[in-house]
Length: 205
Image: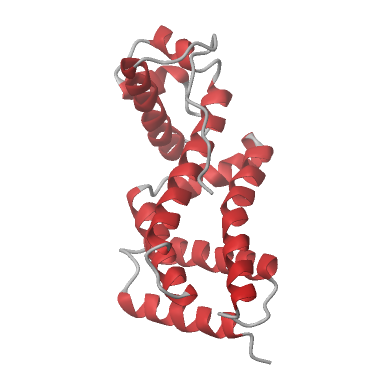
């Protein structure tokens, strides 16, 4: 089932024009840059609007506060990373292929958005409910996909919830090690990751 996403509106609740959507996108991209580089406490609406190339007053047509654009940025990044992973994993013919393709998409998104880690970690202190939102939304489709693979007999009798969260944690830390602190995820790391995932999904005792 595809995700139904309500169209963005202005602060006053009015539908946005194409130009308005473009301006809102510029503000979110600028917020990603500023929050990621400076951190929430040192970020400001002035710095965000300067990075977006719009007047400060324009900001308030789309977001009521710095906190609001931060929360919306978490939602935006979460939606985009889930879309990238889902689109990639659906090309897999088996659950194991889907896993590898999904992880590759996650690593690629992280490479293109290196500030993702810092922004999500800031949410723990700035907006705890958004931290929970991020991981809950990442896990929902993942848990369901593993549950369906179990029901088809394609993988072992694993606990879908525990398995999904465990694999999410593994992917996040590998991304931190090889992307945030390195130059990218080497092919041999992907091969080893696939081997580990295979062992997990086979659920051998």
